[in-house]
Length: 307
Image (cartoon, rainbow, N blue to C red; front, side, top):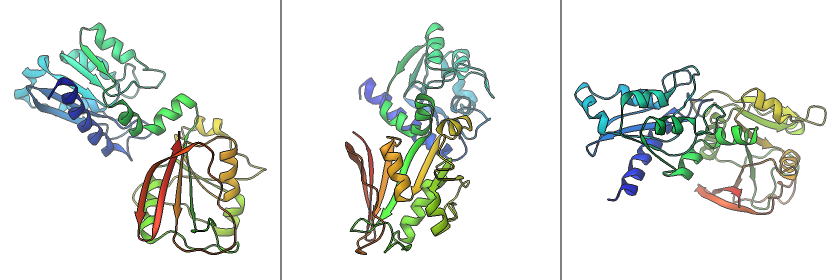
């Protein structure tokens, strides 16, 4: 296996480790780190919880005493650029420099204003060989909420609805169960991964949805209801560190987000049955591409992204 293949192999392990922090690392990004020497992993870790040690700290802490002598020839793999600033913990770039490793491989650059290449520059300035961009797309996808929040100054926005086979979200303007017990559980998983969940006033008054995560594990998202008197303020959400927003409806609310081009992902669940009348689901915007298709029972879930 050539060096590029080896780097990808260990970066995939970093991504695998990083996902363990999905719930507790927020609002920090999910990050995994692997330390390799002599063709084997001598240390690995991930960012477990916001305010505690970062992935690199935990990886170095896991190195056995007998393997510390290998650090001068080691390569540190990390899914996101090591931080270069003092926050709740010291800079990880300083830690890597202090350990005297030979090489560092970063999946992607940290978009946070306090980093943005400074960690890479600090390591290179200390004589460490740094490679950037290994499995970059996968590493960015892992923290798509974090990247959108810092680059667009707004949350990552997912529009989500369930519809019948003939395109209605209710049956003759009355609530109807479209999701199956299993797909409903997946919705609660999506809620647990979101900082806030939003519906329109009409949906709130008609259905009184709980919008919690009772069928999954995790914290309940912040509940938001909007109407003409209480419009959405994305700047306020950004100021309150809301990195991800799940918009569950109704159709007019979805249409507003689509009209204003405020979406990053659209998730549509379609059942096999028809109702012949009711509230039409929102129309998909032009230029969407299918990012994923899942089928559970008789329902199909399609995820759309921008082209």
